[in-house]
Image (tube, rainbow, N blue to C red):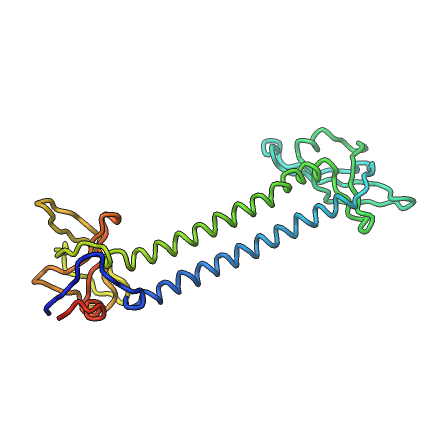
Length: 254
């Protein structure tokens, strides 16, 4: 095979690199799926925050009486939750409710008959909530919209970076890379997937070790035991092997 490779920078359209568009489409598809999943989670969290705010706007504060409580073990109470059983009245109606959550550190100071402050939604009077617990958590939930916005920016940035990284890995070595003859450290592995193998090349009497990338099922351009590859100073330790099909597609063969 006689090669006629132009000097860098070379004109290498993405459409001329076999498999590049398919790999780019896979990255986009995976990114969109991940963003859809994260968006669904963010939507559910947003709805929860809205529901909590709506509860606080409707709820009436009442005084209830503690009937019983359930606490976690003494050594596990810091930051943990306890549940209360309370008696209370809404208008002329008497209610009892169990499973009312609160902070364990607050509940351990209570005893049967103690007065507790409750928030009751007039629409659902049989489901009271302990006032201090709800209000403390509402302060934390107020930060959720900022967290969601920051998360969206980070996600978009990571998506864009991955797209750029994929494009760069496909094109930059071919467009701007130095072409070298690599000496593989051993026989090239056979695989139906992309192959990575250790190799080295010499430049100005200095040996450089790299991890070379070869497309699956392709025959590299050879010179005896050596294979042709493109290396880029901005991607140290990496090399893109030039296979025969790629060289013909790019017009690098006489």
